[in-house]
Image (cartoon, rainbow, N blue to C red):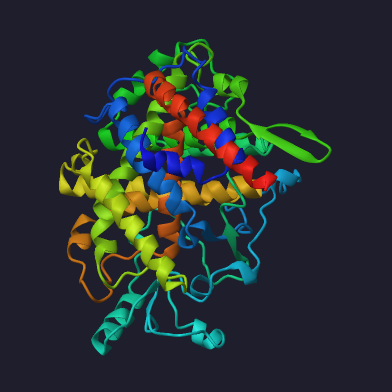
Length: 486
């Protein structure tokens, strides 16, 4: 067991350690749901991902998600659904998202613009008022006059053609900061026709479904027919690589969301106090081999594929953050330096993974045809990001928008290799930029995928993990008890 992993667990305290232990343990009894072997369309096996993620990535990414720069996410949860009349927002109290009070937001974050490099900074002793604060950007740096001119040019640059997502306007009065640690992703009770309509629109209208396939792709569809789950996927094998990748990413995203809900489910509520924990019955309904006619393990494999794509994106975007001009700015210079050091350490780890997905195998045919297919791919995904504004539950909408934007940012990175290679060391580049919103979404989305692959790790790795966690849990619990007694 990695010492870093144990520290990540122990650092959460006894209650959180108990929760993680139970969550990791509840799948060990589901022997019929095995996810092993090599992933399709790449040369990576699941055991290698499990070991790499559990012992190397997960402890660090969890710690990173707790840093101020990555825990506050600005989002507009009031944008109207662009596709159909809304059913009205969910009235269940657990659907509610608590926005972050202004006083709690680090000054360097709330003062910064979404992706602007600005003049201010590192030597500013204190912020006297909002005018001074407005000089601080999401990425803090000092610019020469030439860099300022370059920035002005870049600010005029319309990079919408590079975006795979519909980005929220952070200047909108409806956009609010949310503390992700205080609004965790979990089951809220949101279900029924509203949730079904969202996923049905995603699968049936955006996943390149062939006209010859009549059965719904949506796992939530009320009627699945009598066909075997495995044989149903023969249609997927007939698609080109790019369309197969698209479907697997959406399926993986859906599996990621469902797995998180199963692992953090509202089990009961007594005297107004909710009890959250893993729901084995719900997990089996969505992922068990028998109950899903063989489709469940495929869905979980697609989650691994999603992880692999986002892992690859992190390894490719490292040069962007390694530049001296980039400073993940919150206003606390010491903490900001530690945050960047931790982030760069994660990037180094991602580079060391030996079996990355090869994105160059995509859109590699006839230039004209490849360009057209890539644009179709991008627009389909962008459409899905817009559908997230149709989710009726605010908390589901929050995490749906974040995870979709995180994956969209990963795709933007994978297909911007030339622009990333040309980045100037000490000035902004109009060829490739990431907003703070994109950065936060990317790392938190990857953090979710990392957590979920730990949950569904193989029996052997899971048992080792549980054995070590039991010892850690005992030590943490005794430490807490000792502090209470004192």
